[in-house]
Length: 314
Image (cartoon, rainbow, N blue to C red):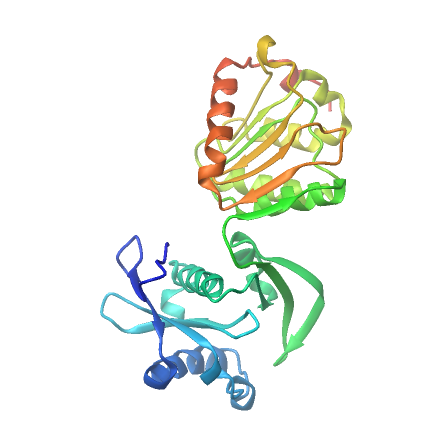
């Protein structure tokens, strides 16, 4: 969903929803009706907590269905806090929440905010991960509901330097969580950084299992399988051979030490030398990712299907 700075209304790609910037003075009744249904009725949030007196100072988004009935809303305050994200139950899992969040992020950038944050209900963490938010701190409770604080830059693309193995790990995890369809990994000896590898393999497995076509493609040297840290990924590839492909670079491509990880043709990590603590992360940047995508496709087409990847003892 792309919002233009000189427009206040736009229809989503499916044509099912219309998204607009609301005027609290004019749209108060619509906004309150949605939030009352979601928070007060469904989640038993007390009225005194829901209506905090800040709405008149906030920016609000309204999403309407094909019959022009308001079905979802959210708000942004002057400090960059996104909140009161509410979608009527009959319209969940259909993209309305993403439309709200994207619209608020664009509005935040136009307002000159560099960062946005929110208090996410813990059951919704995966949704916010997909939009580039990262959690911080510890679980806390609002209205008896567990929450975590999450943050991200207001602007797209999200760019970051990876100057430690911990940052490399967090960057890869973030890229995986934001990807929905495929991951391409081009790494002679994969080094995903320092962190709980189970979290990475959980996300890789999710991607592999939710797509019918091959979703994970890995270019790596045969000696990579001798590293025990690679064993869980190799085992997963053996269980899901139609979803995970592993090839060895062609001889002319084996001198490169670059690590490239590309998600959905729009997110990427580049580590020029895995032995040095330098690298870059770019999220929501399809234009910047395009050269890396072309490079990977060419190398993949030249690559060899080495049986050693599948015959090696775990």
